[in-house]
Image 1 (cartoon, rainbow over the protein chains, first blue to last red):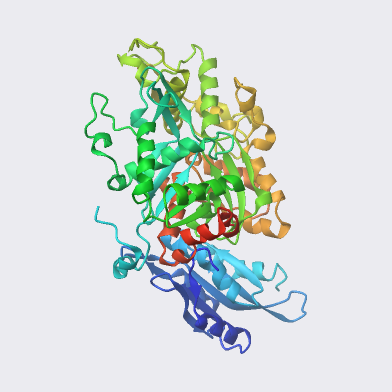
Image 2 (cartoon, rainbow over the protein chains, first blue to last red; image 1 turned 90 degrees about the horizontal axis):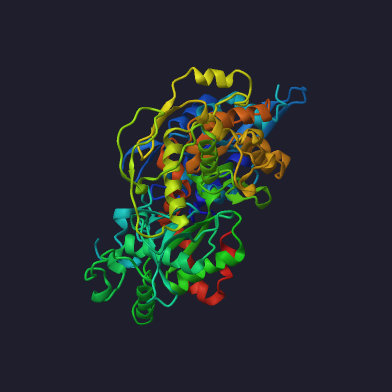
Length: 153
Length: 477
């Protein structure tokens, strides 16, 4: 259970299993429903271009209580693939990303941070977790270095 | 305020089903903050210091008054604090209950306080302060037996220091449930609230407060108990450094808070004050003077003191000469004396980083050791956690607490950490808004308690009745 009490909808787990077992998706972006009660799938895609995925996070928005729209946090799972520098072939690491831009509203940041555990615990088979708070944190090279622990070629 | 609705009849479409009547209470040594969940800032912020007036009519021989507007010079008056300075946890529970009731009831929702017309403050005589005396508290306790408990409709979320002990946690839930009849209760650790409010489930939280500075590692929303570090290098310690600097100035600078000044005349910078001082026909308790001194020193801290940004220590050759060529800040004391401050304003804060630079202190307890400086607290905290977690924590440092608002604090912290951990990625996060820094933990608690989903987290009255106070240890981890 998360510390906020928010729950995880079944579709989150179904989509994750499709990504993990059937390789149906490259990534899944999750968000909290508008009433902050439930984590739902915002988008699942097989687009392999990291930049497209990154811009999805960077441009994500959340509506505040007063109705104004601002930068928004998200959760994402990305099936990250890289080649080992040693030439021993490719590796896949399912990476969990908690995206919470520093310039998002405090309410949205609080809700996402306190609900993260619920989602992470429902998804079995995550290899790496990444907490990203500004745009540099989701640059391909930054993530590659972290996910591969510096072993990528 | 409109008649409070029961949870079932709250129109869910307006607030998205979020809880609107929950209260949030955050107690520190210097201040206690209380307000309604879902609001941006606490509606009531009172000093944790309170006044105790000698009263031969009262059973205990004294009565208490709360709030800075009631702390003024008067005879037979002593200023006390219900929190422990060294631990930042409650020391005097009887008074804690009074202070909290003064805030949660009298200040936040006076219409809920059921008082008899003769005691409601409207019919008071010459005194007319509307103070809640011990006697009133006793009567309202009696009333409570017959009438509804005062907070029967308000779930209460309290914050607590990460080192708070089991006994104190149980005491808190007992008060909420037994004294006030709260329908639900929750305890949140301050570093977790601060980390969440910064959008981080894992973070190294550096809380630079009034009485203490603490460093705590938070991982996936849980504090790592072994990692907790704390020292008294906070706002009050800094006040004492300023005092020491004033004492050693030539001529010596005396701290004369505004209550002592009858009238002042403008004087040139550095000239002695020509103010006429007030005369009191009675003795003032030293604790009152200390309280007022602290208020003046806080003003000095906010407007004059600065932290040497680095890189390197302030004592490194050339730094002080550089500072002396730069514009200083003028501070005028309540008695009219004023002067320009340049290098001194960096000297007083340098001890936070470099124990050899601290100014001589009057009491031995106030001295800090190397291990108590801010960088060393962080090093000790990191050394106490798993090696794999350290890079992530260093990249997610959350700075909070009022004393962290000192000019230059974050720059220096960043420089110190970069020097201490070369090649590692160090990233500080500090809220830009001063209110978010001063009330970080309260704001975090306010958002949590306002969430519609949080109702399943609360410890309900029923659970408490079935399991006793021990439930808080099981649930609020």
